[in-house]
Image (cartoon, rainbow, N blue to C red; front, side, top):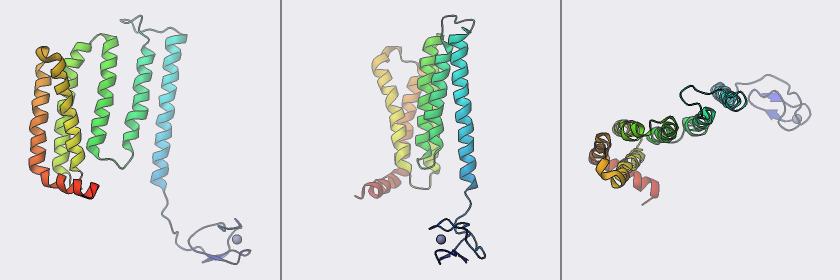
Length: 222
Ligand SMILES: [Zn+2]
């Protein structure tokens, strides 16, 4: 055990300096008390590098567009750098933030899908393929999301089924709203999406209903 010659205290572990007076400790070091946090440091370095790259791209894009007036040939009037900035900012603050540990994976997947779809709708509006996005891409991606959530719910062993059901319900509600407003022009992909969300919701309740009940009791102490 190390000793501080000034404070006359013994300090365990492998500390180099006295925690009270910051003088150098004397004597032999012991096994460190805390494990080295290299993984955390590496993750934080990756995060900083990608954050830096994102901001470089944003600034380079805005300058090329507004200062050098570089345009994309089919869209001479489009300020493409604003779309690029929107994607990068959403990527940074919506998608990268989802990689923090803690929340269930169904919620993360759904959140990422949503951010991407909203931006895709905005982008396709400016690039002129909005109908294709709204009638085909969005419902097909939502179908994929619903199936992914269902599979995640079936293989989940930690008792986090409620979030899967809630996200599936959430994704399932959107087709209903769509049906309500665009009823007659409803496209096939949206109808499939809606039917599938109902079927898989029922499936999850049948197969995982008991787990959901347990989870509600656990979370709300009822
Ligand atoms: Zn000391």
